[in-house]
Image 1: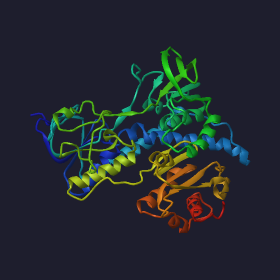
Image 2: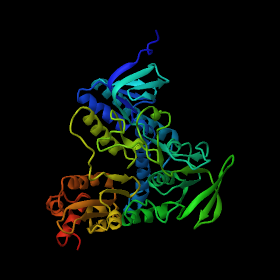
Image 3: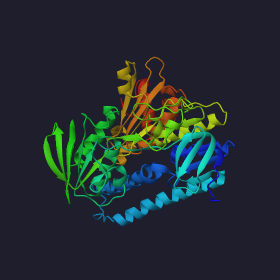
Image 4: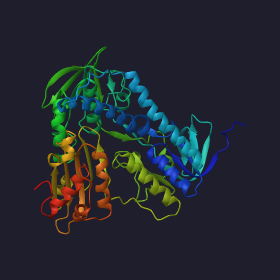
Length: 466
């Protein structure tokens, strides 16, 4: 008999090995469940293999390039950098490989059975596997964590000179001219990488501003930097026609800018769609919304009571750390523990230079909802540490309730915003008031004290800014 003819039986089947999937599998195993993790690729998913980790690896190199150039104004001169694409690729792959091996080791240590293959449902308690040594798996509970994929315009396919985010991360070459279609975080992050490497980058954005969900005062310092770094940024403009040639792509632009231009490569970054194709959800009671995202409750349980869904495939903010938290909630609910996804402050980070990070309520959301808030901003040109780093363009703001001072939101633009935002998350989740932040002693001189100084403004004035 072929090894995989008899179905594997498991307490919990996790479909998808990305951050949400492996976090769910690990938490469930820690709680004593028999766990099987099915993925058609090594653990880590899009985030590790062709998303978060490789992109931040390249963005770090871009930061080094920009820092070396900026150092000249501080009296420090380097020679012109020599860019070795193969060497960069080896470094990126080394990082990915080390993390992948680490996840495989954690699966073994926790007793999580890792099976390669692609799963589709045959019913609410069984999946059939393709491209696997195992034919089928019977489960008591399942968590769908299949993630998302880049969205492409109708009639346009990624390939060759048309790149999605996955292709862009492979750094096939350094195009002389690159068009980024989409002014969200992916278009801007990858545009930053290619611009640092020497490409002349143009961004077309269908709306009247970059990063539409982000408060305008956080975006403005970034825009000022990108206007110098990029060749052009076109607002209220769409790429309405693409003609792919042997060496270039002819692009028709329509909107505020009406022109036809040639680019060496085009990056399409207009969003992502849930990966539900091939799952055969019709064999279950799982329901999806009009965008294809699986609908869940606060425990991440679907309309099929024993099947859960987490991460990008369930919609909401498409963030790896949100997926990981959801995975833990789902695992705990399955294990019979009281659990619900009730986060008040999900942090978001744009890894451009300067970085942008925010959590909790934004000013834009408050205005749309008619919620009265107090906003206090501390400019980094009043921060000794920021000025010493050449980062005086940054800003930290605290959004609070004008009645009781409770911290409702935090926004930061500037160096290391990715790390600084964590204090804001903790403050919101703990129900802190702005005075709590102000009274905490922050080390000096650091960027972290900008949050304390912003909170001091709610008390009438900060030490270094009035």
